[in-house]
Image 1 (tube, rainbow, N blue to C red):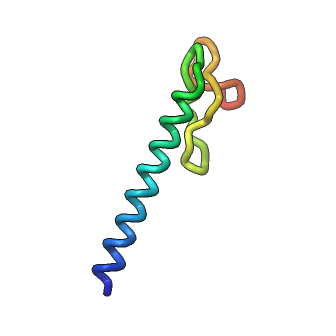
Image 2: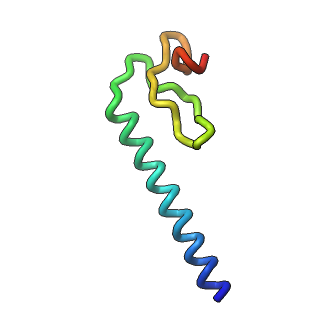
Image 3: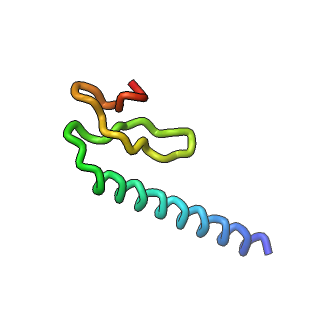
Length: 63
């Protein structure tokens, strides 16, 4: 029973990781930021969706 639980847990974690990676890819493709996307990783694990400001890697709220 423990082996089944470990395999199921690993599978769910892998699916969750791939889903979040795919979602962040979609966000960066949807936004056409002149200076790139803000590189801040928020507490929830997702990258900030705002555009970076000129001369910075961060948006107006994370600089």
